[in-house]
Image (cartoon, rainbow, N blue to C red; front, side, top):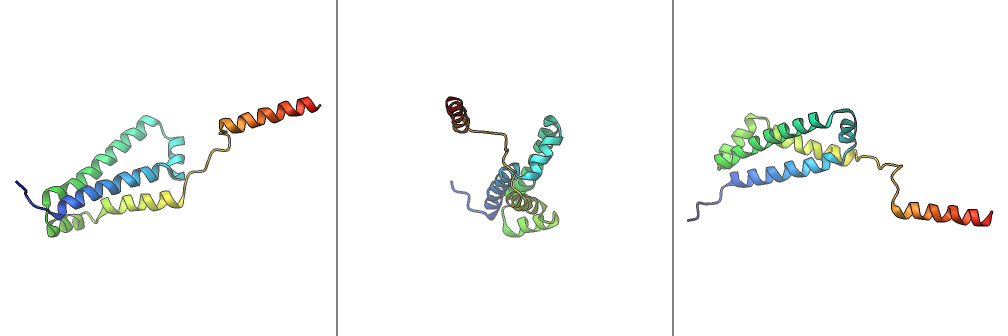
Length: 124
């Protein structure tokens, strides 16, 4: 039996997509690389799990409230923080991408350098 289409379902699933996308973009940003270099991995994992749980709990309420008025009322009471933070993370992640490591070389670059060194030795 079909139980209907409610806006709360769309708020929930689109919010989870927004959270997942923000998390992926933020992970490739310079601030995230700076934090990763300075904070213990276990502490970061705990913080990440806690933030994801908070975000899922924030978004899942819309799944139960269902109607537009109830959902907007709920999000308004929390000042849309669960929507603002992921959008902020996306903007920062896109504006400040992490720098590429200068020391990492591909196997082709290493092979070319080895060949040029051998050529120089043959010439000398």
